[in-house]
Length: 111
Length: 115
Image (tube, rainbow over all chains, first blue to last red; front, side, top):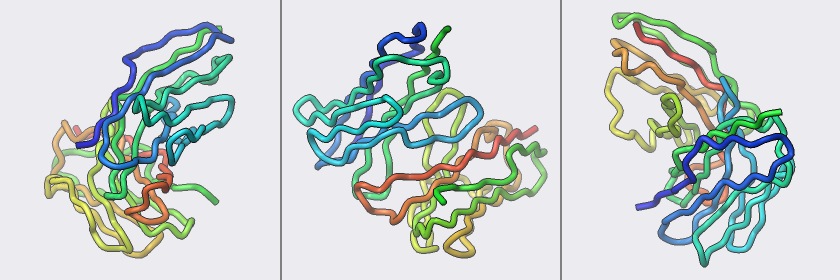
């Protein structure tokens, strides 16, 4: 079956630090890959996505590259802000009508 | 408009109550989803509606009853819930169910507490 493994949290960084949250996946075929962000007390919001190998998704300073050879989709940001504190979920879609989510990584950014 | 709305935002109910959660989207999406999310966990899929017909039921107990009255609305009827059903209930929609590349748009959720 499909699965997504995310780096365990929580992750605590100082403002302006570099962020990496690792995500690897197992899937049959060629899935699409997503990063969602969930701020406290809210639903999930799409942060970025990539639909084929070597695609790079980017949004709000966050980036992730779909690496088929390493089955990875690591999330990066060069300089985090306090407002980036949230839970980040890596997910994949196949064409079977379901998304598979990772367990989530909690990021706390301190001023 | 890329918004999915959910009401109520918070709900407290007893184990003998009957209540409903509502979800609405006006993006022309034909797939709608209910998820249950416990604290510090990923969302768990409960139901999928595709073109207003129930497509996926992830073996959810019958005390949860979904309904899709039209292409914009999705309800979740609750009856005789248990305290362990307390969670954040998320609604989502996407253009179609089986698209590989579609984004799911999530609502803000209903925080349900069962006493």
